Every structure is written in C-alpha cells, then in structure tokens.
Amino acid sequence: IVLGVPWYGYRYECSPETKLNDRFCSIKPFAFRGVNCSDGIGREVAYKNIIDIMRQNRPHLQFDEYMKAPFFSVKEQHDADRGKVGVVQYWFDNPQSLSIKYRFAREAGLLGVGPFTFGHLDPIKQPAESRAMWAALDSFFQ
Image 1 (cartoon, helix red, strand yellow):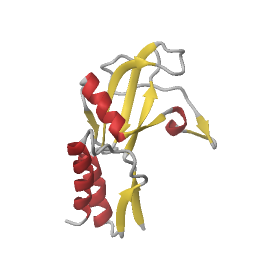
Image 2 (tube, rainbow, N blue to C red):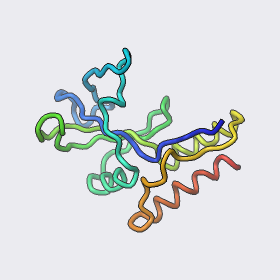
Image 3 (cartoon, rainbow, N blue to C red):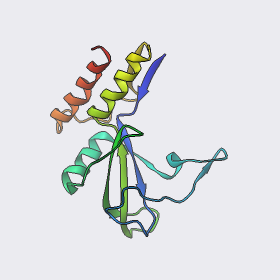
C-alpha cells in the first residue's frame, strides 16, 4: 500500500457571519452520498496558487493538530454570492505537514508515498517552495 497525498488544498467560502479572526468558518451543509461532505462545497486549489495567495495577503497561518494541516483565512470575493467579499478559508498541506504524514506512513509499514499529481508546483516562480515539497519526501526514508 502506498499513501497518496495532495499537493493542493481546498478553498471554502465561509458563511456571512464568519469573522476574519475566527478559527474555523462555518460552511453550508452539502450532502454527498448521504453524508455532509466538505469536499463538495470547497474548491481545489493548487499548492503554487496557495503560495501566491499567502504572499499577496500575508495571512495568519494556523495549524490544526488533529488534521496535522495548516490553514488560513482571507477576505476575497465569493463565487457563490455573485462576487460579494467575505471570509474564505484555505486548508492545505505543506512540507511540514507532509513530513508528519510521510513519517506516519513509514512507521505504519506502508511501501511508499507520493502526490496524487505533480502539476501543482511552480519550480520556475517558486523554486524554494517546490524544492521543499520534494525534500519533504525524504521523511519517509529517514
């Protein structure tokens, strides 16, 4: 068994009552196969685009200990509300969170790790970030 990991994140448009400094944003329920599913209400965003958003907005980066994943909130136009500006929250993996998951895979006896897709990095415009994502794979072998 090999652990597949995302080199991308998800963008969630928060409910109107959500404030920028709220830890979590509420999203409208979205049923998928009888279960409330956040993937159906969020939108996939490439890691390289998340890096650009963080550079432009300088958000307060937070880390969720349960999910072992970073996230942040910014104000952006909402797609669902015809362009109204509101709070949007991004959840993703970065080299630090992926290293935790790669070490877990090694300790669990999995045979390998790898991203679902390789096209979510930009080694030309973001060489350091791209190298760090690749270097995180070393955590599986150490």
